Each structure stands twice: as C-alpha cells, then as structure tokens.
Amino acid sequence: MTASNPLHDESQPRPGGQPLRGGHLDSTAQLMNRITSQLGSQLSLVSLDGKRRGTPPALVLVGHGSRDPRALSTIRALIEKVRELRPEVPVHLGHIELNEPLLPDTLASLGTGEAVLVPLLLSRGYHVKQDIPEAAAASAARTRVAAPLGPHPLLVETLYARLVEAGWRSRTSEAARRSSGVVLAAAGSRDPDAAVDTRRTARLLAERLGVPVVPAYASAAAPTVPNAVRALAARGRDRVAIASYFTAPGRFATECAEAAPWIAAAPLGAHPAMARLVLHRYDQTVAAPASAPERRLASA
Image (cartoon, rainbow, N blue to C red):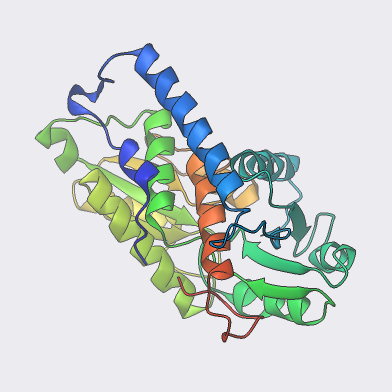
C-alpha cells in the first residue's frame, strides 16, 4: 500500500538541491520533529475518554541473522532509532537463525504478554509465511505478525538516500540519465511473491530516479546481479549503479557490491526512514480490527 507520511515529503529535493535557509532551518526542523515525536508518544498513552492506556504491545524486531558482525550492530542501531521515536514501546530483538537471541527465546521471555512481530525482511517468502508465524504460534505470548517491510515508499526513499551517499547525482543532464541505470540487488527467494514484491520496489525506485531499475538476486532467483548489469549495458546504459536491497551488511550485500561497474550503495541499515517504517508496520498491526485473528500477517 502507499502510505501517507508527512516526513516522506520532506526528503524530496528542494529547488536547486539546496535547503531554503541553511543550517539554522535544518536544526529548527529537527527540534520540531523531536518535539512532535515526543508529544505524539505522550498522547498515544491517553485514550479518547481521557483515561491513561496500559503498556502498549511489545515490538519484536525479527532479523534473519548473519555471521557478519556488522549485521547485528546495524540492527541494534536501528533498534535505538525506533526507541528514540517511540520510547513508551518495549522493543525486543529475535533472530530466525545464526544470531542470539533466537526468536523463540525472545518470545519466551515475554511470557503471556502481548507482542507485535515486525519482520526485518523486504518481501514475502518462506520466513514471513512459515518460520515467523510458526514461532509465534508456538509461544505463550499473545502475538500478531506484521507484514514485511517491503514494498513501501519509505524503502524507496532509503534506497535513494543510499545511492546519493554513494555518488548518485540528484540532478543530472538528460544525456546522463539516458546512459544511467540501476540494479536493485536483493537476496532472492524461490517464492514467486518475493519476486513480485521486489519488482514493485524496482518500479517505485525507477519512478523516483527517472532511469531503468532492474531487480536482480544474489541467490535462488534470476537474473543475477552481473547478468542484470550486462543487460543494462546492452541497452546503452553504461553508468550502472548497484542499489543494495538488504537490511544490513553481509555476504550477499558484499558480493553484489563487488559487481558494480560504477557505484554501489550501502545497505538500507539504520536510516531514519527505516525506523519510521518499522513503527508504521507496528502501528498498522496494532490498529487492525479486533475481529481479525491475533496471529496474522498485516496487509501490506
């Protein structure tokens, strides 16, 4: 779904690519954002009849797990950003494999409490459809499972920001655009729904950039990243960037970046838009009708 978010528009480039009044306006905007976030956090604890609400459901971020230590540190940094935005929400971490704490252990620590599981995954696939719901169903906690993070416009804004950090110019000539292209490098899955979700993100990013964006995969699906690069080159697109569609650094992200003929962006990581997206999925699930089953996938 396309979500309306007031912060989403703030990330659009201003005319000329420059802020209207320099650093003072930026610092003032940041201060106002913090005040608004804190006010929203306090108001969320009060119901419409003026009575104070109880503790909100815990937010359990579900990471895949990685042998790369940078992955865990990146997710922990993202958790801190989520906590800063919503300090009244208890935030926990559980992994599907490879890292501790594992998801069943995190859920066991919650006892019979209420929790919303937010997958740090970018598309539908086996982990979202099977592993996470099964772990939730086996726990004593009262759980609901949110949709994966993607596709969503906030992911596109993060991808765009990472490309700009790597050297992508937000304002280029028509000739430069005609010679440029992007490969959206994703992990890959045998589930056809995962490919549908990744292609949708590629289309949204293409609209954002004004150049072709080809989805490609590190494993389990085609095309591979090198093949996608060659396909763009065959179309006269010799300035090809790699957009890293991974939540954190790891082996797949590194291998995909090495195939870049021009620039390679960093993974999504702990970008502020990622923290907002995590909370959007959490809020979406909490706000689901009471008649819906507790253990469910929120609609994307």
